Image 1: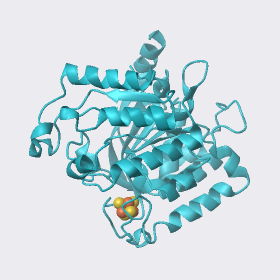
Image 2: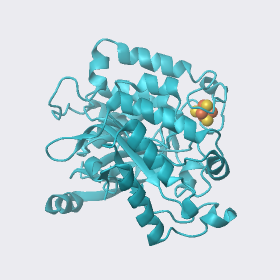
Image 3: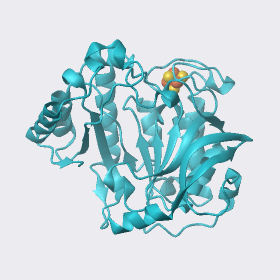
Length: 355
Ligand code: SF4
């Protein structure tokens, strides 16, 4: 705790940062690096950090040398032409800047990036999780707590070089990882940025922090690139997903995606200091009236992935955005509902539950 307090004391808020002449209105928190704002391009010239202790970690380094990472970038960018980057398969030409359900064109849009100390403990360590919040989402959760970003489009378009610069800047600030929030609709743009950043010295593991509605072809391109997957498991019931997140077949898609993520990275591994190195973290937000299907979700995780799955059973639901449109969503969950959720997780055999 003393280490964390010290790190927090060293931090300062940088109110905004230049991105292609515009400003990301940022909740940007970085240790002092000189200058209240900084051109992102300069981060590309920063010296390499000696933060790595093995040639094959983070995973993308082994793909970088043989040219495989570049091939993955090409394949991923081709997916944008008739977009099937996520399971919605809109078919629009995002290379020509057309927009589908996620309202994102050729370039990724970033709302903010910063060191985050509120994520799961293995991601935060003492240096923080280097979080990049992508604007828009391939889900339309009617209770979203970040609807300004996910649904209303707050953010600034960035080129791959600028996104790479953000990653390098977060590394220089002391982050333990690059935490990509809502990445599912911009996976090709992320891959392109990682290839640039890795060449320029990025040596932090990537955290793929998604809503759990991810397409298999996209996940296969991320195999060997992402070290830590952190998907949601939002619903066990298709009707609930359709009504509350405006999405079809969420449970089936989610289960297939989680199986693939687990196949790629396995259960969560931490280093001797407790910092995440590789593996799967699953988040499950408990909703009122058992709308999230917590018992079924926990049984799936325990029985079809592993009883060693690291799970964050989250209690922080509060009515936001359009939650008032659904009577059941107009209240927070009760203590009793949360205790029941934890009890079903434990009775399913899960024992690595985030506190
Ligand atoms: S990434 Fe966006 S445009 Fe592409 S299929 Fe998904 S929602 Fe549609």
